[in-house]
Length: 355
Image (cartoon, rainbow, N blue to C red; front, side, top):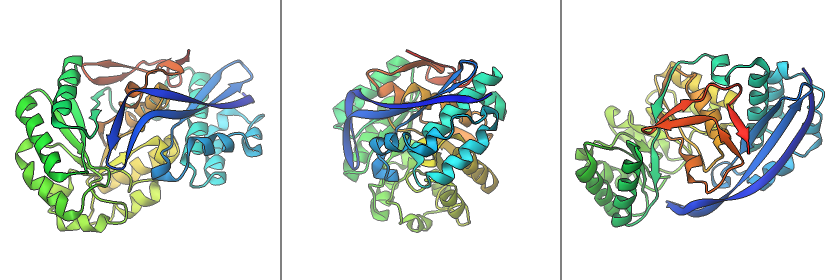
């Protein structure tokens, strides 16, 4: 079944409300979409939302790449060879994970629709559902508590709280959240590289009684060895995010002693499902758990992450709330939320419909 056309375009979408992390504030997001049409009329859709701060690729760069001669030469190729096409794409667009992800996702979606099955079933479904965390940015205590109350009212049971600007304020926010919601909400923390080892130790000590489930990327990329001064039990709840960009990084940090007991996998860091699967396999053999994350993204790429996450036996945590931040989207479907749990809709491909 041959590919007959490929079309890519971008769209800037507003967020429902701005949010702040340790190194930036965001009020909108530019997403890139790729549509791959087959000769039987099936169209697979991919989407990319790379973070230039993390991977060095902007959405504008992604769109230019998707309009090059290499991509046009995929027309006429057979969708049944989609894994080879992904391989060629990753080789050609080396170190450009947003570009890789857009093509990888579109090919997967088209292939799943061609077979008439969800992508997760092609790889083998290991997990039925897990709760996703929802994110509270860095903000004053009163606003943090108000956001937590709103999310609890909506049925979510896991919070991910951004920290990393002021460790004393971070400790106060987590302590107050735990005091108020210890029987209702699980708390995770994401410092976005904002701590030194001294600040991290201060945070750990100050929140020791707060049952923090995990701490994501507490220290800057390049300082991972500094985490080795922490005891084994503490490192088991430290998740690598910006440090785990690709399979090579996953392999490097899998050697013992391991700085991270958890790997955060984002399709926009590793270039799509096949890159994610490589990282997941390395982690599984190293005894490292998986935490699936995202940027602000379309329902499409969130659904894609959910499919490959549920195909990996060492998946333990989800942080796939990126599409919930969007004031609008170009697709619908993909998954449903029930009391914060994410469930695939079991339609072919990624189960999404273009609006």
